[in-house]
Image: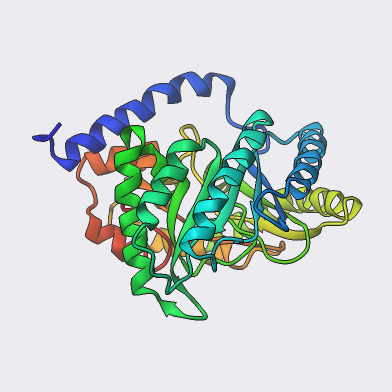
Length: 354
């Protein structure tokens, strides 16, 4: 592995991603053009070992999943986000809370629920032992996600947060097999409360619920047969609003009946192995991802996602996670774009440098 180039690694991962793609497509795309990637319930814990809020959230999520599935939607995961109860804690309090977090993990694993506890270190926190603590948390849990803020609108960039996040990533990479524990940890920059996607989700305020989507096939369908960017944008906007409106009304009703606030839908088209955002962009531009028109295509999609007429939450924009998307990974292995190109595209959307 040491003498393999990054391109070789990307090619291998692309091949691995494409292999199961053939199997999963036998069942066809999702009937509505998108899947509900997550139903995320927000709740407040009074103490780290407080289970009541989590138990209530689990019960709500089970009911919500059944109702949404009965309405014809495919629901992939159910998740809980708590307030960042450890963000202002000192090293001793954080260490003492580890056992309680492990107990929460066992509880949610038993129910097939994911849980995010949000930021666990103050933006200007100074804890030389934080990396070791983060590695132990990742090593001894299965469904817990957590973050460190590296920037926020209130405090701008946090150099100490950047250092702590880097130390945590390195420690988690050493402590977990293949470094996979880092899929449950993130350096979070300007992430608002209420986003449904992990690992950056966290909660503020009264109990809530929000939705995240896996929707690239919906974009591909909207773009098919269009001749100009303006036509494609108009078609995508109409498609999103017609498809997401009924889901929004359904989830609003579920929230009202459970006395939860409705946070909205994160309309970011998160990809999957059979739901490629790279493929959707190629339908829009008519050329392989990385060609000259890719930037304009990304900007057009972002414009629509930022103006769709449903209540949105979280990032609600275009993201390009190269190693999570089979077409993006394939185009990277073909040398069609570079890290510099990704940084250029990130001027109009998000990107994943992996």
